Image 1 (spheres, rainbow, N blue to C red):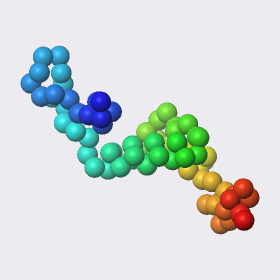
Image 2 (cartoon, rainbow, N blue to C red):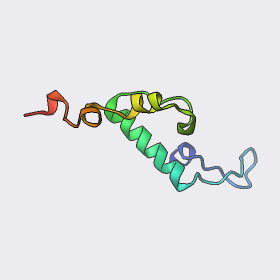
Image 3 (spheres, rainbow, N blue to C red):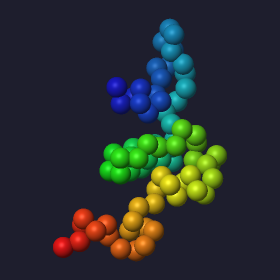
Length: 77
């Protein structure tokens, strides 16, 4: 299953593409976006990151700590 999620395809098998594994940068991007989406509850943009505007990137990645430098109120003790 992990191979399917990361884009691996069987080589030389009928009905299968010969596409190789994704490169390290793409794998890291998948890991970071998935982790942040699970942590923040935000839905990742549906377009590749290089096609997103600044406002779209900020809307997905920014949180109260990055916007203000302070932790969220619920996390303060």
